[in-house]
Image 1 (cartoon, one colour):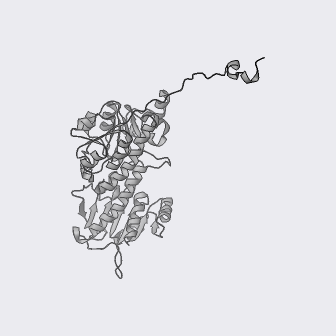
Image 2 (tube, one colour):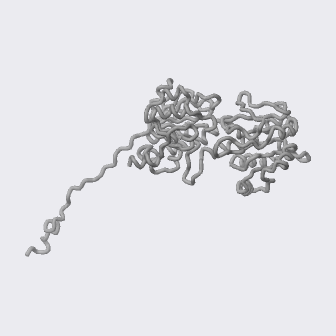
Image 3 (cartoon, one colour):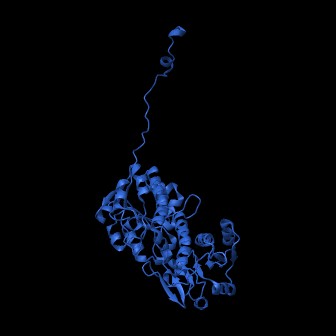
Length: 405
């Protein structure tokens, strides 16, 4: 018998170290991101700020920015190049990227430059969306995501909320400007002073736009009235602003009475399915005070005032019945730098997350919120609402993913 001191457990029982196969993680492919200069009329925002480009480039991703892309948002080519971006002097160079980000929907010329199986991010501006636009993207076999449809982990729409916050606050500041003498207004200070009563502000809608318009108006010292038919929204607004504000459901008689006394009226009625309902009729506007101001934030969905007509940043107002109407659809573009930061801080993390999941397809499998933003997947229309609206074949996105597993 082998003495205990010389006994080799490994040899006797086959426990000697053996070579084993170890799975080596595959190297993740870095993102190739392009941001063209916005070509749409008066679109001043950008999808990525220099800070976001720094974050992406520091993580090894390639970012190509078309020259002068950030000019309207006060971002220079130098800032982008210092952040690590390549500056392209031809738009065709930008469109070679596998991922494209912009703010406004792609123009007809830009769609022609798209390549099959690119992933593109933009708004779609549903009220003005045409069937030809959807069909053109489908023919290009791209995967298209709309900022308006992207959800966060809590099920909210972060881009919509951010832009709504901006629009609500900006609407009051714009209204205050047109009440002053600068644009031949009444010469009113919105908040008044000691011994002089403040201006009266009526806000239609108690959603995010209405809430932030209320905050801004109260902050400037105005007297505020809020109307909405959703009691829950009115309760939420009261709770969030932490001030007892005059609120009411939309009673035509009461609303008409308040409008006749109002100096500033903000329309913030949002529709889930299409055009905003007309809350204020032509006759009601005709009864308002001369020199009063209407800011129709709902104009991107048709407007909630019967007298509203779309205007732009160069000619933002018109007067009817002596009432100044401001009906610019993209109010957030008026404060393009703030709006760009708001948009960029949502987009950049999504791009980084796509890399962490080794590609957009894996991200779409794992992130229901980001997946909700898809309306075209590799050339297939996956949004049922758009399918019904334009009579285009619809494919369930979940089935497409199930088939690829």
